[in-house]
Image 1 (cartoon, rainbow, N blue to C red):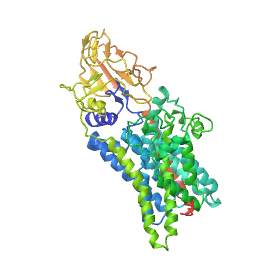
Image 2: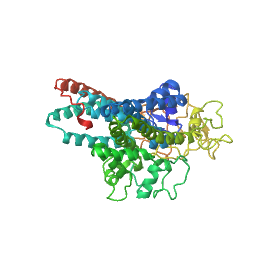
Image 3: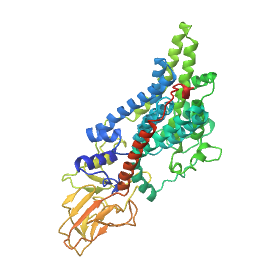
Image 4: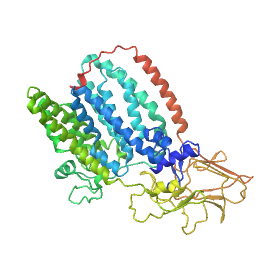
Length: 549
């Protein structure tokens, strides 16, 4: 929430492209963060409606996107509107995602793009432009939050696409080639800018997972069939992993498993295989016998700290299997109308189980939002180490967001997961605090302040200007790069600079990778147009039912 507020302030209040986040841990880069971006439903809603309402409106928008995508997928499998409704509702009431949303992991809302991505893969043989559409939707998921959901989805669907290609008949060779030739450049066009800036963050602060563990069989049954709704519950005697409940719980429902087993009477299909593979990947990573052990050997997948998040995809493929079981019963009772209400009852049970649990999970996190105490009368930027908490208000109050609203920088323990969470900067009322900017022991005030630019005048040219913020390779002074050998953020080094002969300092934050990102986006846009023109001349042989059999 704080990062979206920083994004909104940069653009709306200061009319700058987001770069530096001065309100977080002494100043951290905003561009490479994996949880906030302008080019997303959240980003647009925050700019239009403010952070508080924008994030709420975008949450509803993501649910609509997910429901619509799941409905489109269901149309490829089942003609009955009831079965389509059941699958769409089961997909969006994903309990695993509800656990994450309840603790503020809003980045996982990009999962609702995944049903669309699956839909356009399954339309590869009858929609000649499905590669373009898949590239756009998957690109939006990557831009919103590149870690976890897009990474696992890319691996899953790459495997699915290869299997479908191998299983296909000869006349579809060109169809799949056409799909990939459209998908790859369109995806690159959308994600290149985002990835070019993230690259510098990962280069300086690589993410390597060191967490190892597994779930034994009783633990697997527990997390799949025990409806945890208390997020503060201890995991003692629940799983063999020392991990918060929201990182492992994934209520699937008893009805879904029974119906998925029933669907096996119609044969084993790729969605059954996907479900089993995902459960295997979720079960552990500390032995060569676990699938995740090998997945995390792949470059970039070694950066995923919490491998259990792969479970987010289980309800999607299990939902196809369970609804296929319902379809089997629906067909079997076509001439026995008295039994049809029992099938409808099973349909209701399938959705109601997970919907009730997901609702109770989200309800545990719901509380009226109250700003933290404290004030900043003159509105000048200052760093602080703590903020008074309103009496009677529990720890869920977003103190960092409250501080940002008051133009106060929060110094302690709120960095991105791969960036330092603490800094040597000194907060207001801390021992040794002189001011945010000072020469010797004399505080000075900039004539212009913004997140990405500060201007000082009438300084003593013979005395260094000290700044109470983190230095970075992204800072330039009077057009000259200050710290070319530093990382994108340094939390334990001083930020000192000599004024020019006129006593002036013009500081500007230029995060690396932006020029490359813009150039790459333009190049891939041209490539995409060329590919669209080239493949438009290829004949297309529709076979709409082939990939759902």
